[in-house]
Amino acid sequence: GAGVSQSPRYKVAKRGQDVALRCDPISGHVSLFWYQQALGQGPEFLTYFQNEAQLDKSGLPSDRFFAERPEGSVSTLKIQRTQQEDSAVYLCASSLAPALDGQYFGPGTRLTVT
Amino acid sequence: QKEVEQNSGPLSVPEGAIASLNCTYSDRVSQSFFWYRQYSGKSPELIMSIYSNGDKEDGRFTAQLNKASQYVSLLIRDSQPSDSATYLCAVRGSTLGRLYFGRGTQLTVWP
Image (tube, rainbow over all chains, first blue to last red; front, side, top):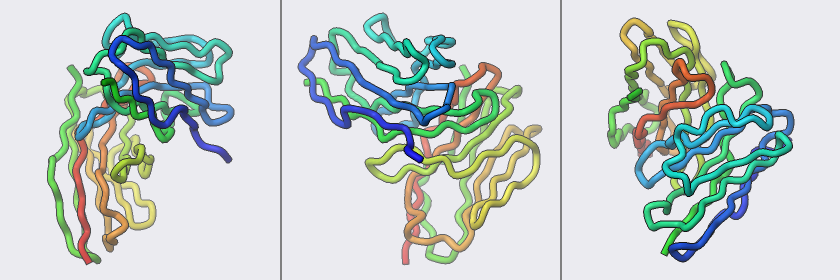
């Protein structure tokens, strides 16, 4: 079956622009996660949804970051007024059951803010 | 602050050797442990999960967990050049859902 998909794969934004990153999880996976990965680092947690409920947003670095999953499937991560420090790879992952299952990652969106 | 530490490497082994990757974690109540493989320019790929003390084998991979020592390891037997990648240790702690990742260990297997 299809894995996690993300779009766009690459995004170049000018500082101050708003961006929206999309994630389509594996069908039937109730849990969806967003991570941010800087070069040479492990992924850093941003936020977590179980179905449409956002259960943990403690990793969002500022109020410029917003995520939603209105119908419990596709999710969008929005970054307002992008800054250079937002440049990173944004990874989406999904899992069937949050307590035990491993998380399966999409290909990521590489965001470059100029 | 929950921390996951990995030997940063890089680790270089000849083809056919055993590669040993290590990870320690700080949150004593952590319950689930994962190893991911990440090729350059790609996203992490789940290769092993382990939940209880002891060894878990899957093909050429063996994960080892010692909760008392807060230590997780991954052994790769008969290493192949295609195993060359960064290996990420991930831990799920007491907070449901989120994973904490180490910085990764870069492994090179030379022919």
